Length: 299
Image (cartoon, rainbow, N blue to C red):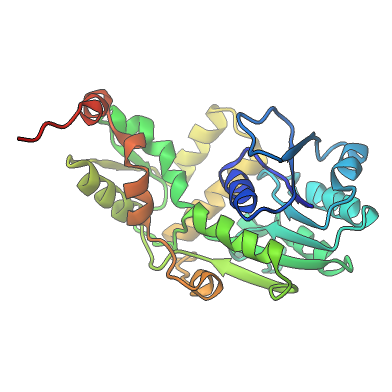
């Protein structure tokens, strides 16, 4: 039995789908009702703040995919699940962390990864088998731009021309499945990136090419981004980490590309262009959506 936490999220839902396809016995953990459930998947409702619910979720489980929502609460939530896993006799935990996740917590440049470092250390000290996945920025983060692009408005650019090894979350999920189903990745941390560095202007240019129309960008300096996020009701701790991350990327601090996805999956990592092509419909405006739905007529 494999327990998948964060089962309604971008990565968690894909992990669940891929494991179901492989025929693995599955339990999906969520705080909310799942919109749909693969046949044979057991659903358990639990919260990281409820130790008893976590123990029930982990009972009889062989492996856990550990995904915690970003925020200052990540260390406590990681530790709660690790403790439940140990109490329940779980053999292995695969934790979704973040790129640069093991830099010292006192290093100011490591701030975006500070949330995950305690959980990584707790796993290493737990006596459980473990694998840590440290993905770069997700290609799917650009879905935040979809409303602006559909409305013909410019995309806000918080990171300037800074490049990142943007990774397709489907690749992250595939790696997680391999780690959950095999022992050869035990005791290893992987940094998961796409095949090349891409910046926000690069991503916008590729989307514009796919859509066949221009898309603009507007630079949003870090201090302005902070004001906008706070005004939008974001938790201040989340804002602090996000703004530090924006500065880090602007300064080239996340210009990292690895071949870990290629080595683990036996194929090249998907590019941002591939992700964008597969999700093109999310960025279509109303007229483009209507045209796409029209039946084609051939002579």
